[in-house]
Image (tube, rainbow, N blue to C red; front, top):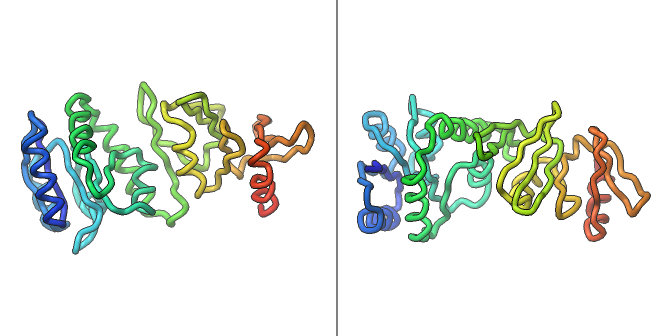
Length: 250
């Protein structure tokens, strides 16, 4: 049985989640719930669970405060939040699971079933949460790390070490310093949305580059970027003006 804990201060949402779990999620048990940070910490400090459903904001703090104060968190987490800016961006960088309010029951059921069918390693979960907490301690647009999930492992990468990203259909290749390469099964547009605020620009439908690793812009052959690792990066016609404008401001 999957033991589930809910931390949610809105009584209507709390009751809705409880109803979904009790009626549509067999092989689960609702171990407890809390409507404040203090009560959540008290429960989680003395009880063993498999999955926590966390709202972000509470009258006495945030779910991140819960995690910071717990000595250990050997359970999976799904964040349920109405926040679509900084907190959500930090969650995306950590590759943690999340659902947006208003809650879609089918999405919650699917998320719980995914965890039932896939026994996620506790170490991997801890890596994601530690990355999340690290990024939350940085300035709002300066996330330090990103979690990249491959078929073999979960890797935590410092953003400053990403030279560029290249699309290959539904896959994205990350080219890092030290001649390293990581391939993840997510499209480039997902990372474009995350990295565009931390010094990356989309030069082409297939390329996302770190401004810190650009060596030059060459005007010949229609225009292209040369990276410090000697890679030539295409600049599409429709993005050329945007790219030049960004480069002129550096």
